[in-house]
Amino acid sequence: MYDIIIKNGKILDGTGCPAFDSDLAIKDGKIACIAENLTGGKKIIDARGLVVTPGFIDSHSHSDSTVLSFPGQAEKAEQGITTSIGGNCGSTNWPALKNGEVVLASTMLDQAAHVPQGSNLATFVGHRALRRVVMGMEKRSATQGELEKMGKLLRDGIQAGALGISFGLIYTPSCYARTEELIYLAKVAKECGGMLSAHIRSEADDLVEAVSEMITVAKAADVRTVFSHHKAMFRQNHGKVNTTLALIRQAIKEGADIYCDVYPYIASSTSLAARFIPDKYVNDQLPEYMKDIRLRSELKTKNLEKWGEDLSWVQINTCAYDPAFSGLTLTEAAQLHSKDVYETLFDILQAQPQCQASFLSMCEADVETVMAYERTMICTDSAVAGDKIDYHPRLRGSFPRVLGRYVRQRNVVSLPEMIRKMTSLPASVYGLQRKGLLAPGYDADICIFDPDTIIDRADFKDCTKQAEGLFYVFVSGQLVAENAIYNGATPGKLILRKNEVS
Image (cartoon, rainbow, N blue to C red; front, side, top):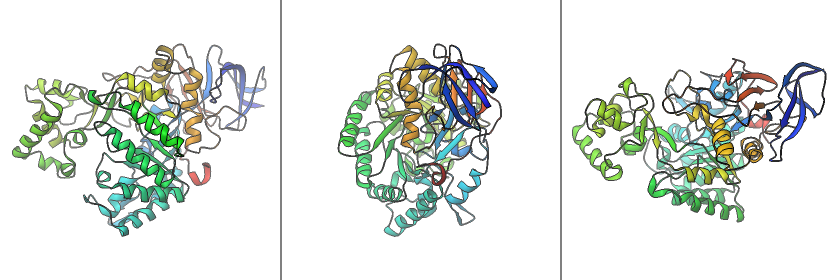
């Protein structure tokens, strides 16, 4: 007797092969059988006219940031994500300093592993966390002794089950690291059986140089590397992804093991401070700095030279300084109170230094070019909403958007190939056992959707809308979402590499 039989569906098994008609049986959280005319199920789901696929794997997320506070991960389940890769961009809560004592990554991972989740999660150790523990926010190169301390902390995390190390080289204090530091830590990750995820130093004017640097790191350490949310930002750089992908292809020919991921939007998201304020001011004293009239004048002059007066490409997410600014562009926020746009920016940062924004700075052609690359995976680059009401719509809509907009409407790649990019490819890259394929013995992480109607509905004006056309999502054989609504089930877990990953 099977627990569930999914009948009459078109099976897309994650290999990239065409769909075939079959039933699929689930028992004890695993796929038990794929064959026609199956009987003996305690529960029957009729998938006539729908496709049945492996659960989607979010190649680049920040779900680790809420693994304890919002373990349901509702927005993941509601877009078909059954496993997320967290701890990216160098940002993790482990290791950390607490009351002057180091809290090891192994301690935090063990704690999180005992909290049931709505979707599975595997995570990296963040370079920013390593640097903060060992060096604080100091703007300098690491000494040999400091490198060894960071390496020891990294080993602890990987040996406890983390995937490897992630870099966030646009952010402090990681941006202070020299290439030699990156190579040293990448080698430590390799020695421990881990890998590397990299938010590179620049995704704009210095994109090509930043890609070249990370290729150097990948080759020197001989470590599997994922280029995070690969893109080219701002009009003068559009098209550069053709050059960077050519560099990556050449590196692969020379023996490097490199992949990319991408999210399906032309808007990125980070803090306002990261985009407009020099690194030396982006710290706990930022509110005080923003009170300095002379500094404001200097920063305005520099930003005018770089960005000009039109900041209509900058959209504020949630604004505690003035809730009326939430969802507006900086230009619109300034007009609301008849103020200068840069003075409005500085006012926001004085009151809310961590204010996040979306930046409409990419182009569709580049998104499609990266998405079509054979080694590209799909991601959200997001945590979960938690108690937030304003956020980038990618947090809720990325995977349905890819299937609706880029597969069905724009024919960027075929449906079977896109499912491969969402499932078996990331499972292979991150070494996730028994995930990413529909095959007997694999975990019953499954999505059932209508390829003719699936689409995202969340947008920048209303980021809370659920997807259409996504009917069932299972994690380990348990239904977690129906009609894109999370039901509160928590069959997922933190995946520890030492136990679950090869």
